[in-house]
Length: 616
Image (cartoon, rainbow, N blue to C red):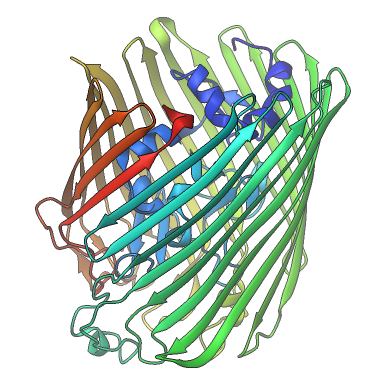
């Protein structure tokens, strides 16, 4: 490692508050904090990682977070009918509740269904995203079987003065989106305030025949299903001369979604994340960090204008982390995590509260060309008792920038409240927690102007929770997921090319009627290529994404055909702080489905005007 691990750890709080600045200063190897809960460079991570910066967001011009992340190694989404509709993430073929999602260090996701509402997160309020693939329960506890995704909201910059920002987007399906921001900072403090809104009349979420195909659960309503969102964010902090630091963050997203349903067809949603953090150094070789946070989710459901029910979930959480420099290039991290979950609904659940307390230990060391990371954790869940997880990773630096890595880790996931107790006979209180074992080999290289990486992995999951043919949750005895993912980045004659590919084999091994079947909604092959170039004030680019065949059900009776989409984009800096952007998505108007009987947008065009002095 180029820096001692202790020095890196002492920078970690500053990195989470000022990640964009760190990334600009080290663009070849961005600083990340999610892989080890301490600040390291992406080159030092012994896991497969991806980093999306604010500059990437403005270059790619996404309308949503799934729009931004689709096609990254191991990442696929299943969307139920367009903008704002329920969207599930599948990371490395694991289930949609097997990825831990954080916003500014705060765990998010409904405690009812275990899903983070990616479709409700305002992309214009995001500064950067870190995607870490592979099991991380030994550091974060439950849910991190497939990996961890951390989203950092936009923030102020030291010594920047007052920096306003503004953007407005209009496009197909009557889409209109606007964002206003105010950021700033001085030698010690920084802050950011943001407000935004979006509305679209949407598309018809279900194609005709869904009502019959799903036994009346969905209505055939050949109308457009509108979506609207209003969001606010604020964060800030203060750092003293002795490097002690306090910071806070808040994000609130209000959505209204129309959809095709027999019993309800409209929802009003609230997603809120709030957190604060204090870090200081009791001794030169010891950094301690205290953090607290809360995530709220509420869904009020309607049939037309008639209120039919609600579901509310709350997760309170607290953490105490200590980073100890035990020797040069050796770091020991010890911590405690606590979270309390609560759910409430008009229909009532058999149980409404539970909590989890976890203690973890991590060692990171560098010995010549060898890097070692070891971690272990013990969680006590008030419903399911004690669970132990661990991980070991090794990396070796070869000549010419090559690096070989190998890792092994265990993880677990506790059944959600919906899995266990959902009313109307859809819950199964006899479910057991899922447990996994994963092994991985990786080879990577980074040179001037280009870089590449290949990772092969296998994950075995015991007691996998899946829906049977009657949509009743049950524990599949075993599942095996094998995969290979690769990425290549290169500068070619002034063009920047970034390519990703994935091969996946997610198999059911329950020994029953579905033994050998493919786990649903996981495409076996994916590929994405981004190509961009600037000509002075002009920028042009294209993205091509392809996904192979998958299935919508455990029995593999409902195939989802493979498909490809192509996007074109351009931008023009017509003044130092002003930019106009245009994007044409799904250029060839491909029809495809990621969920059986649910439509996706066709050819779409978007135009954005942006004022952003902070990023010029």
